[in-house]
Length: 232
Length: 400
Image (cartoon, rainbow over all chains, first blue to last red; front, side, top):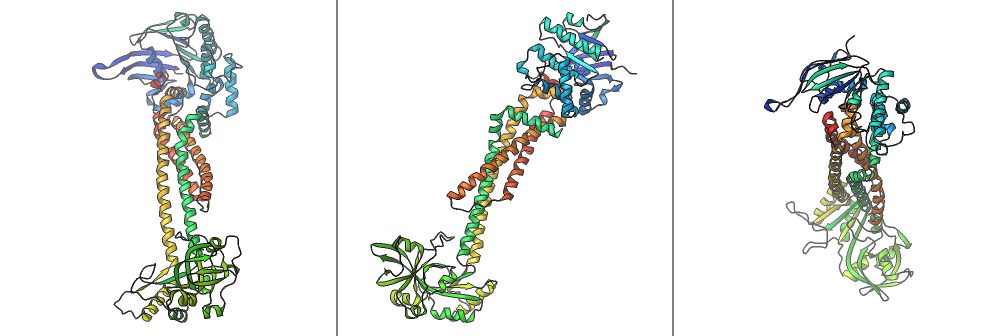
């Protein structure tokens, strides 16, 4: 059984010639199903680039990215979109909900692209909102929700498709400590109860404590990879 | 997916009602302009055809000189003999009305009216498709003796008599005092814009003896039977007249035969060309409307870059994003088309009333305008939609 995520000697170079910027300089990283990994490192260390590659939004300049043993370099733009739709869920720092769209519609969005019939879709979206504790907020639009609530909607949208991997890019970056803890508890519970693999970029030590493994980036390379006992 | 694209598009349009309305205004005006032009043009064509038919279904007008209009100097007029010869020799002619005419003032009491006095006989009514609405036509003895009797066109009757009964009254034409024996049913304006009801009819003999003082006939109107070979009849008449007017083989005709059917074709041809031209000008505005849609869709793509990024990240395929924006453009433009059709039909009815042109609904042009507006949506929506679909999701997500 191949690893869920397997990066082999991945580099990523932006631009060409003397102005070229090497964001990743040979990253090897294996993540098994069910793990909860925190990715840490200072700005410009390459962690965001690495996340983009994991998300199939970007492709390595050299090296291989195997997802469930499948070489993603062989996939075209549409096939990578299909892979995202099928296996990946995203949570962003800025929530990224659709403007002037209700919480329910936001959560339904990935299911629409999966072609799920309307009634099933609505029920699944309601259930997902319930699982993040937002029952009763279905018809509120982005502007009518607090930051914490928006991030909960974003999490509901990410997990409603029951993805293999939840990719979270600084999910608590815009929130206060109490709100951050609620969000982290949610993410950890999905990892624990639904065995959704979580890869989370953060630079807050407190939040990294929720993970059972911390990978540190510096200058485009993995400098530390430590397992720990999860706080939650 | 197509259905959900439609729903997404409807939502997006509902969120921006004012902007959407302004966007489609170009299409609305374009579609409405095309339909109005073609509908009114079609009504005008039908009206011209109708008016010429009212002149007499298959009427030839034989006049001296090459052109229509008053007799030219040195060119002999016709005579009663010519009309009789045509009656005798041209079997296709079912009614022949020789006529002479002159502009004159008709006077009754204190009223006077400048009109055309036509000297002819009852066959004039026949070739012109006219009916007596009250009174009677000329009697044989009146025609033979050149009696002072007249029939009035509706315009002359109303100008001289107003609400009075004209029958039995005497009107004065120069020195002649004529008794009104009949009134002709109104026919309205001719295709050439002249009033067909503005005339006084008197017996030809009365005209020749008491007004003109000669034996001339200034024109002969010939009505052909249904199914007659018009061109053959014209050739026969021309041959007969050349012979009677002693025109040598190398000389040109000094008379003309005008075929009103030919005239019909000419005039309807002209209005049709005009209609097509106006329609084409209107179609340009439809094109401009399409460019308006493209403009707004491009703005919309830029404005919604982040949304597109989210959709792509969540797993939307390129063609799904393309479809979304394309459907949005199409919904906008077809909605504009429908609005334009409603506007056009309302405006056409109002315009045809005020222009006194019949309203003829033309489903063909409505369908064409509608499909054209949808096509405008596809053509001008494609470029912005492709721009949206090709966005780099990473860049798009970073977009503020």
